[in-house]
Image (cartoon, rainbow, N blue to C red):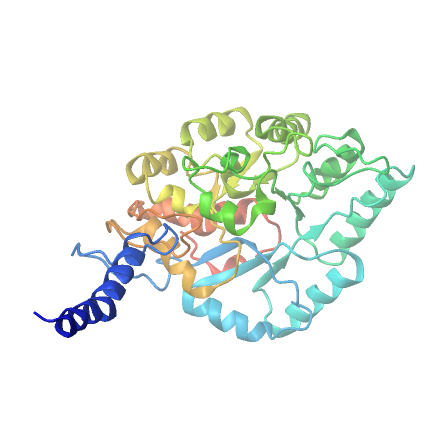
Length: 370
């Protein structure tokens, strides 16, 4: 072979083979975020696009309810078999009243509004009296519950820059007022405990921490431990047995249902709802089913972010016995889901019966009498 032939062979190798090897190397070095294999498993099952029984979503957020087309939202709800939606983002004062008035005209009976508490100015001598009075006014204007956001206990600061604890005694009259009015307090405290763990290869929510690093709570100079944050919430439950509390997101104990069960045993005034934790239930179907049957009188349906197509996964996990199906958000669950196949009576309690017991003025005619 002459020099010209040798050079031609080398050229062909460089042009065609080297790029192919480089592409292969790139494929083999893809990161976990990109890796999303198509399962070859073939098993029975299908999406469930409407709940088996009418339901109440106890945990939703609609900040523009005073200006949005709530009739359109109600029609979307109809397609899901959702009869009542609880908007936890009701704010307070005139904003809340406007939401109540608008929804009552556009879709009577379909929306319940919860008020929010303003913790600004907690150092002021009249904060407690002013806040209790505002809650009374919000109730008179149609609020039928209170929603406490996770900023309390984490990022709410007093005028000296100190963290305001959830069990701060200045808030006690607010919790007591809710009990006097007969309205529940849906309280979101803390974050999943894993948000306090190191962001490393052992962290199940590594993708979320990478995408939203501000959600990490591992800085002990800024945040107390998960146990401290949650203990403050539990102190509130303990101090106010006459007030009904709804522990949002299963109290971030969906990954430890035995502990959540002990929590419910200790606090008979507390309910728990499943918003944003269905992925935890869908990976432990047998134990979760036992838990739902045992605590069927204390559990509520909630979703959190309002995206109608995402409800399908909730229905499928709760109702079906399907195996190995997808969750809708990888940063919450890179694993597959399995259906709990809950009994009808348990489903009815989770979907609507329990909420009817604790949230006043829901139109009971929208639901079966049995």
